[in-house]
Image (cartoon, rainbow, N blue to C red; front, side, top):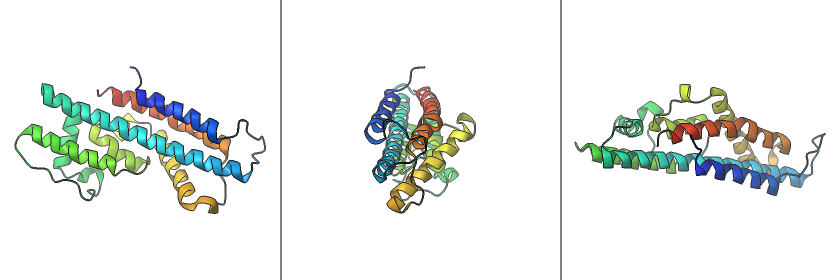
Length: 208
């Protein structure tokens, strides 16, 4: 199955950020100037933002397509079913209900109910801030993705670790005792994050 345009755009963007922010060659002893460390912090923060945008954008594409497909063909699909189920169970299966979600109309018409579910999901995606496992749970489970069996648990851990790493950089800035190593940061993204995103891309595209 071909990968999404969003996936290729993400990879291209990571390459651009590597070129713009990280040194052309890495020091064997891991000794860098404060400027290099600051740029590495920028690399981590911006790659995190690109990954977050990529996942949210692709999830919305899948949700919109599946609901539109239901309206036009009335063909049952797992995404529409998942959105409807969580909307009318109050999202309690995923944790505390997010604030200010639009209340469902409780109409009998199934089209109206699924439209309600999509509105709520869009607001959940819009309110998302992060790529940790808990963030992914809210984004993916409504689309019928099972975190425990459809995704690699090691990758989920890596995503959470990257989210924590980014949080430390953004919220502590120069007060971080251990500056981020540019080579390690780059390798972590390409070896621990991107392969799992590729598998997720295939899984999400299979729903369209």
